[in-house]
Length: 272
Ligand SMILES: NC(=O)c1ccc[n+]([C@@H]2O[C@H](COP(=O)([O-])OP(=O)(O)OC[C@H]3O[C@@H](n4cnc5c(N)ncnc54)[C@H](O)[C@@H]3O)[C@@H](O)[C@H]2O)c1
Image (tube, rainbow, N blue to C red; front, side, top):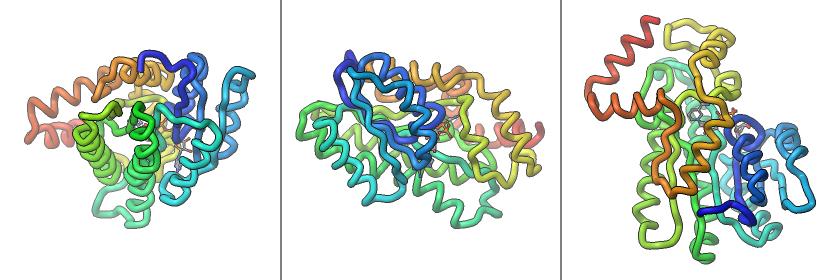
């Protein structure tokens, strides 16, 4: 996809952070949008400045964990826009808790959104992309889909699962015109830490406010920068899109020390 002008992009999780920045940048490049999120008010904040006579922007209040709702969403998008070219499965949440203490309902809530949301979005739009003979599916994993860290067991599981799912999808579609990208951001300054179900920090302390402030300090990349890297990656047809020096460093560390990086990171993180 060399140009986004006149295309139709679907973005889940468009009320905040990376999803909102993607919507803004795609709109600026003349791309029609179908924006979905569970947060209807946030969707309106994203959408209001984007509306223009030349651009078709539809908004959809949607829980990506709800399979039927996602398939209904795909039907609505096709009825409204007629086509769909770019599907960005971006909605995501975090839980900060040790595996020992983690409640099943928090684990299931996170997997419903981060993993099943990606599966639902992919399966709901894929038949249309194949019939149309063009399209690009972009699934948001994380650098935490490449390396694990303490207290992020559920998040790690979901993002490793998104990577496995997306890489298999890419293999299955390699003889079709449909492109598939998996995105692995490092720390991006968004609302993700503030919206997390937070119980336990890596340092063993439970202070959600401090942890979110620390996340903002450590996260060097803005949502706007992240969106630019993702759109460049889509244009270039990159299968794997890493965002930020932190993500590139941790990716190399994992390849260099696949068996020993967990001990190294645990020492670093739990001490600090
Ligand atoms: N911020 C980071 O450091 C970072 C790093 C790696 C990966 N990611 C991934 O990037 C993606 C975007 O996250 P972000 O950082 O912009 O976070 P964010 O919290 O700013 O935005 C996430 C959006 O997802 C929406 N959402 C949550 N549950 C939903 C549901 N059930 N159905 C529909 N929408 C729902 C939220 O309302 C919000 O608008 C996520 O998949 C996240 O895991 C983020």
